[in-house]
Image 1 (spheres, rainbow, N blue to C red):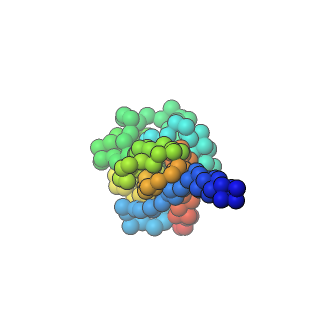
Image 2: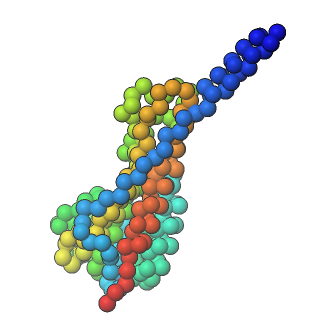
Length: 202
């Protein structure tokens, strides 16, 4: 009877351990393609436009963004989504000089801020009893900000944060952060970094 009881205890412990999910932790990479470390918010009229924002987090992203920009720029910031402002076409994230010239000629702004919060990859489930057999599978979200000087037609600031989860479990259940939560976390890290780069100096 003792051997039988030990056998059942062993089976119970084995099954319990097998059901404990492995957790894939996201990694975040902050990068910039410009040398400017700070943005001078002291003067000028600013226009904010969104390029792409994941719909499920749109309201939260816009609320946080407006709260940050309003506190730094006050009445000198305008939002394309809230104003009858003319822009030549649906904006992409990387703008050439001709588009910047059209925006400047059609509107009385000195600077343009573009925000892009996008999902690049969502290749495996949030929770699965069967791990992905492809270790190259990823969840990936990228949040980016570009600032253009509309007077010189040059990009003066860029910062991006990439959030990545790699499917690296080999056995047992797998739990990973939901792609929308990954996108929001990536955006919040970008917004924090961007806020730290906003300064007012004469």
